[in-house]
Image (cartoon, rainbow, N blue to C red):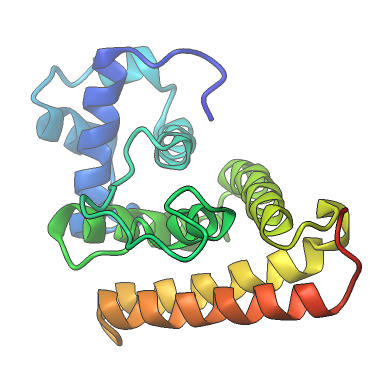
Length: 205
């Protein structure tokens, strides 16, 4: 997340950057293009971002914070444990951004582009490393709630689940599968991970 509050002007610039990245990719992103897309003066983006590298880290933080995230409007069907069950929370965390709708696809493309660019950008890679560690902690904690086991014992299972989800997410972004197929595959991975985790260790009484 951001370490400081993001103002409305920054949000305007970050939203514009997301649109540009989704349309043309990270490699073609330039500060002057950002100003044009946002409808501001050429020099204004530099008041908030020292340059392109800092802008990309800002976009990553913006998307990862949840401020730019797409959320599906329809609720999941209540399961046997109720709508607020740990299983539902885990499912929402892993599938809620996948939908065959323009806003969801746009943000998914931005995320994929930032992942690829991090191979060549040390600052972006460090920020992505921190974001992923926080993501692993969140998903492992939700998995621990599902199976009532200490979270530290479930970190490998949580990492494997995230890896599977990212694979299906990438296939969806590439158009190899649609949103329903991606969610069905992720749900199966969640069910399998929960079942295996319940079998491999004592729960919390």
